[in-house]
Length: 185
Picture (cartoon, rainbow, N blue to C red):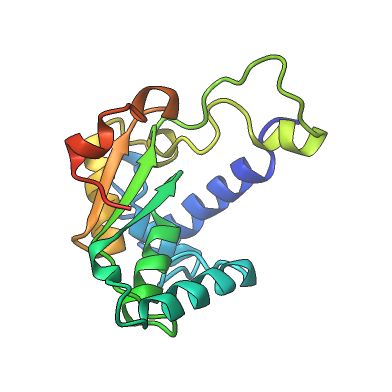
């Protein structure tokens, strides 16, 4: 019962990271870099083939002389530790599927998943994995400061074009967000 594989992965990652770093994490804190190194995620999370068609399509589109992809932004809803952000930025910057972009926006509460309506229908597996508080990076890293978490993610991703929108979507996706933050399609 409970969050099962999420908790097991977290515990395993923390143990591996502490061993790999010689126990260098301060006060039991785990850095994103230590966790990634412990899981051999040097280039970010190793995502499966379902992403490849999207990368291929984006890369082909951006090769068109009229595309001007460098003027557009990328949006990711759900950041956690930025593992996929690192993979995506590296793939688009220097990987097989090169494509320029202006900014990469990460939307996240940094508090884990919110409570769901009691009327939401879920499978047993979904109910055990996607609970309120799951993917709480502050709790996982034992770092209460969202600013420090965001700084750590930016350092791990290693791309100056990363920006964050903090909060649950029902509160952070406001009608004025695009103009306030200078977002582009």
